[in-house]
Length: 214
Image (cartoon, helix red, strand yellow):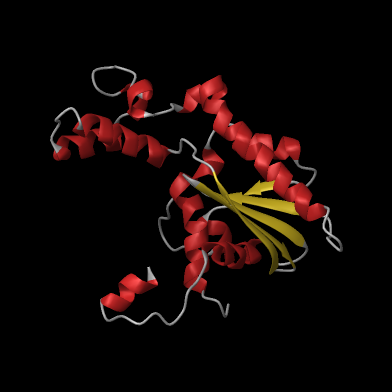
């Protein structure tokens, strides 16, 4: 990425990492104690464990989850392959459940869509179960490090936090309380503000905007 910027005559002065942006944002919500901040995205989960707001441990976990954005993209790809005009695709993707589009046909098999309700079954629950096992392993690894202090709370955010089974499953496997945070927990928002998955995805974005000196 830096090489690409250089070829366009732009000089990169600083490089920031999403994991550290997550830590800065989480520090607003929990400035004291040992805290694990977890951002569950569409394809990557970031774990940052902080002590009094200072990152001590970072781990990135590849994990594909069926968030609303993933289902919409999959539905659009399935419909455009069928020759539907893009203007129609945009209207449908914004108003209709992607799992029941195209004349009521279930697209989950051909398009890779896993409807939210299907997460209770074997196909949908497997990615969630795998992610929860890896998160539990990560938190246990940190807890067993020499000099590590007990994690006092877990802050959960990102669109994947809204996927069925993620929040309760993490709470079940963790001794520390799990708290879901979104945009309004880390920044003051005037007037109307985003909600749902978007509000949780924006937590790390706020951390990037805060900058490394915050």
